[in-house]
Image 1 (cartoon, rainbow, N blue to C red):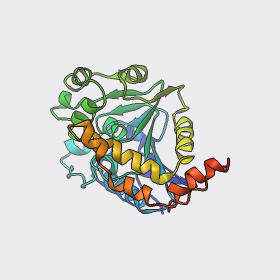
Image 2: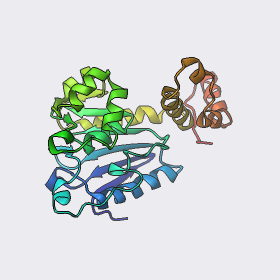
Image 3: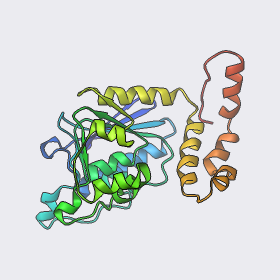
Image 4: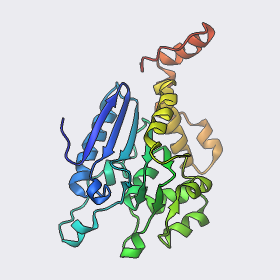
Length: 258
């Protein structure tokens, strides 16, 4: 299927989605967000796709965020229910996502990366939530996800000023998983995806769901005593037996996602 605002490449159990508007630093508008939402809907529904990567076309940007020229021209319409890039408001995706940030990640671009589970940043990557500088708020998750990811005072230092944070500082703050040389973000993201794909897909999804839902609990005891839906599905699966069996037989497990 041809796409207008992104490219989609499936490599085995891995889906790579590239934001493809390099002429505007991969800034997105509602039509692009709708297209991306459909792409991620399909990813979520397909049993043969286990891990996703999102990156940006060109060497300059992951995504500069909302296409302000469209908004300034009075042509802006609300994004769909899944939000920016079809990801910022998607809260029910248990499959892991990796952001390969190869340049500028501003506003909605940064929010898209924050909606992923792992952020790989090239050395030339720059992150910011500059919305207050243009009279807006980082309402696509920035003002909520960032303070839940790094210390609140550090997050507020970014949110209230819109200042730009380079990749290395992002790593030190804790929202970047790994910093790599310029041009290597995507290949490194694939390496991380490969490590995830060595694991049971049901166990990975159960781990992601339990981690995020557990953070919403006020008490650690409550989170630890709760068996979340994906966790129960993992317990009931054939892969729950296959893992220990493969270990005992000293062989690689044959994950069937069943």
